[in-house]
Length: 233
Ligand code: ADE
Image (cartoon, rainbow, N blue to C red):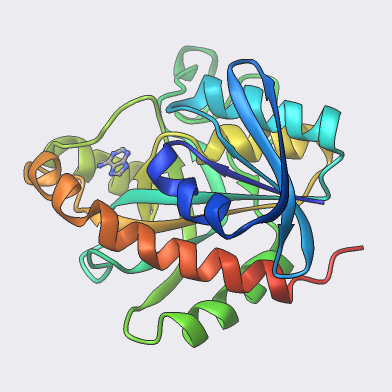
């Protein structure tokens, strides 16, 4: 079973519409829509925005649906000049940019008493997504790299520069690292798939609504194709 999480309804409703044999169960105020897509068993859910919602959602997927892969689909702000609005970022690893235990000697972003700064995404899922993306979204660029998450909509040039200098991420959003952490704790492979809706700078709050739908259309096309091509054990 493949678990697919989007933070907002807009990010998952087209996937839900394409599913067959759907049944819905509500847990923690989240509707888990189980069914089939491209011949595979999947469960699609809107987690709500932010790391706590995303972490809870992932744990429910692990406990009640025994998922053997988690894909997070959605939009993000670009942290790299070459990554344009509409382009796709696939995670190599994820971290929480708003974690700070520097006073105890940890690098900023690292959760105390956890062994690493970031959580590694699954390479097989990323390679599969990359191939599918080139096929279904031939007009955009696909990048693989670090995804940053925090309970903040980044819309400020200085903050953006600090994120780039401190962590070297490709994009910033609000759920991926929580999904990565929860997946890691449960031993489940995961991938964050994000299309760029804004540049995470002073123009972000203006660009975001204008480009949200276009960005989402790219992730939806990718995830639909990818589900059909995934071979999970
Ligand atoms: N999601 C889309 N754009 C974002 C941004 N600039 N910051 C955080 N989350 C986002």
